[in-house]
Amino acid sequence: MGEFELIRHYFFPIAEAGHTSAVVLGPGDDCAIQQIEPGRDLVFSVDALVEGVHFPPHYDPEKLGWRCLAVAASDLAAMGADPVCFTLALTLPDADPDWLHGFARGLASAAKHFGLALAGGDTTRGPLTLSLQVHGTVPRGQAIRRSGARAGDYICVSGTLGGAGAALDYLGSDNPGADEQALLVRYHYPEARLDLGVALRGYASAAVDISDGLVADLGHILAASGVAASIDATRLPVSAALKRLAGEDAVNHAMNAGDDYELCITISPQAWESLPEDIRGRLTIIGEVKSGEGLAITHNGQSQALAAGGYDHFRT
Ligand SMILES: [Mg+2]
Image 1 (cartoon, rainbow, N blue to C red):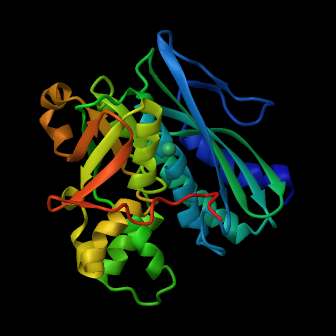
Image 2 (cartoon, rainbow, N blue to C red):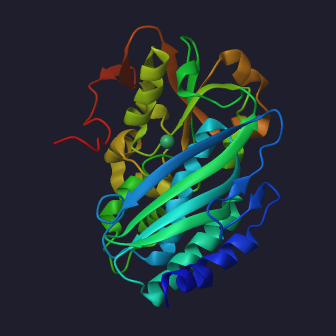
C-alpha cells in the first residue's frame, strides 16, 4: 500500500466519524480549514512524542493511539478550551498494517471520547514519532493562563495523583494484580480533564495540566505568576491502590511522578465558594499561593525538604 492509500485506509474513516461543522475542510487538500465563531479565540498546542523518550519501545499501538491524543488534549483542558480538532504527523519506521490498524483503533476511540475531529495529517518514514496539533476555542479573553495566580488563592488538583507514574514499575509485569492493574490503566489511558477545564473558566485564576509531576508543573504557575506557594503533603489525593502498593512512598509519587494529566489550578477563596458543588467535588485543596518565591511543603505541620524535584527533560 502506498502512502496515500495507507492514510486513506486507516485515517480517513476517523476524520469522517468525527465530522464537525467547525472543520469546513478536512483531510485531502493542502490545508484544512477551521471556522472560528465570532467572539472566540483559537487556542492551539503541538506535542511531539518520541518512542523510547515519551513512551516505551514496542509500546502497544492501540494504547499509543489513545495516549498520544489524550496527552495533547490535556493542554486544551489546562487552558479551559472547548476541543475542536487535531492534525497528526506520523513518522513510522515501516508501514506495518497490524500496527496501523491498532493505532488507528486507539486514536479513533480517543478522538470520539475527547470530541476532537481529525482535520489533517502527514506521514513520513523514520524513527517512530507522533506529532499532534490540537485546536480548541474559548470565548474571547477567557483562556485560563499560567500567569494569573495571586497570593491568597487556593491551590487545587483534580482526581488522584501519582498513579500513572507509579505504574512504570509494572509495565513489564506478566500477571499484574488488581491494584497494579488500576495504576496501569491510569498510565495507558489518561483522561484529559476537558469538561473540568471548561467548567473552571471564569473561576480559576491559573491552571496547568500535570504532565511532568505536581512540583514541576505547579512550578510553572509560580514562575509565570511571580508568586510562591505552600502545599500540605498530607492533603494530596492518592488512590487506594497506590496507597496499598507504595505505602509511605505514595506521597512522593503524588508529588513528583508525571503522566497523570490531572489539572492543577489556583482559585481565589471567593471564586471557590461560588463554584458549582459538583465541580468543587472534583477538586482537592492542597495548599495556598503566597507572595514571594519558591515552594514550601509541609507534612503533618512540619516543613519538609523538597524531594527529588519534578522530571526535567534536559537534566543531565
Ligand atoms: Mg501542559
